[in-house]
Length: 171
Ligand code: AR6
Image (cartoon, rainbow, N blue to C red; front, side, top):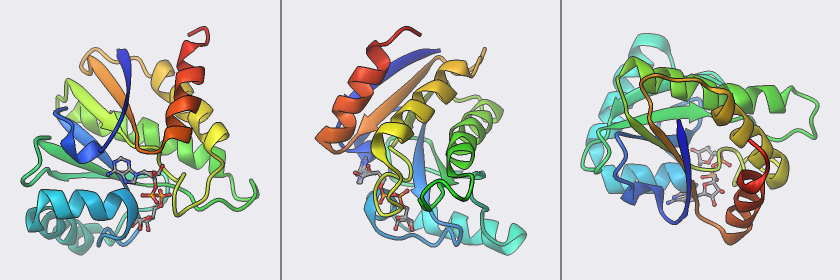
């Protein structure tokens, strides 16, 4: 799996799937979640509500998949990152699970390309450097015969610089 890094807005990505940093309610919110629902239109929320009715939301570290609505991406994979609690609540493992479970869902749906935001590093306050290390390791270690390319989409320059550093290290 090739790994790419870009700085920008994930809603503009032309990958088969984009990942959303959602919350357990799946009903939308601020940050990248708000941006994805705004850009993708009401079809995404409608699909999220159907999932809620079926399974009652989404647990931390888990992921669900919906239409991409009006986005260029065919799918949105909604994953719920951990709220940073000073490392006391297995946040590192939960964050890793977000990446792994999103990649598994992408494979189940035959996605060739996927784009990730920097899950949990906004409103959920996960330390950015540690989050970047976890994200890069989880994606590098994931061996796929279906997904050809994973893109990290960094919105803020601080995350972009951290990912540049992390990705320039030995694979
Ligand atoms: N494209 C890519 N990345 C973005 C964009 C965008 N358009 N907008 C923000 N980011 P956050 P969290 C980056 O707060 O910390 C929501 O209310 C941002 O710079 O969106 O996982 C949910 O509903 C940051 O690096 O997600 C949850 O309640 C990263 O996305 C809660 O926030 C994640 O920041 C989830 O918090």
